[in-house]
Image 1 (cartoon, rainbow, N blue to C red):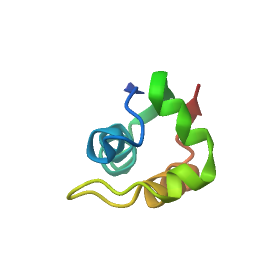
Image 2: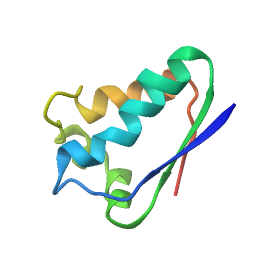
Image 3: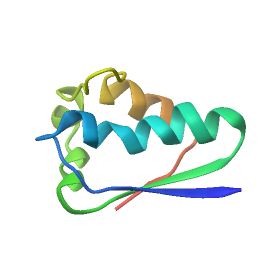
Image 4: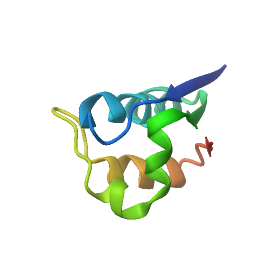
Length: 79
């Protein structure tokens, strides 16, 4: 099964911004499903490494950790 996650929230709301990445890498990809994340709107700010490094949502892993896990699991991130 292939699942597309659309991330449209930027760093202004760290928790909401982290949820698509968390679901993709710790949910879908972890159980063998093919996950893809698409950055749209304010989420395109995450193309800047310093922005990713500064985001940590409430009750979620830091966004940098989620991005690293996406890279390790080969979860594509499209813009």
